[in-house]
Amino acid sequence: MPIKEGTGLVIGTNLLNIAMPFIKYVQGDYAAISKPKEFDINWRQIERVEGRQNDAFIKRDGELVPAGTILDLTYRWMFDVGINIQEFEIIQTSPTEFKVRVKEPDLLSDLEKRKSSFQHLEELLTRVFGPGITVNV
Image (cartoon, rainbow, N blue to C red):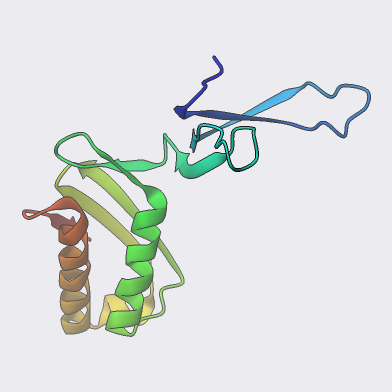
């Protein structure tokens, strides 16, 4: 259903396809659309892209945290700790518990570095999700 203002599901179409220009593509992305401004362009504009609704983390109060926020947080984590992780996965198992899988042989073999590194990740997640966060490796 089209919205006049607020947040809604983004549906894209390829208007360059002369044979079938109105095939719609739903990727699951959500965006906020603004009211037309009198002094500006007189059509609606995307105000904010909120990302994929099914790719979000959830706070205790039900508020969604975009996956991009967690990605930014992991960049901060790797920079602060001085690690270069080849692959990682963060899975939220409850509003306060996260499971982390990493592919980084040096980190996994050095117990002290591993412990301090994941403690720092826990501190960063606490900034977003509040106190009482647990990170399991």
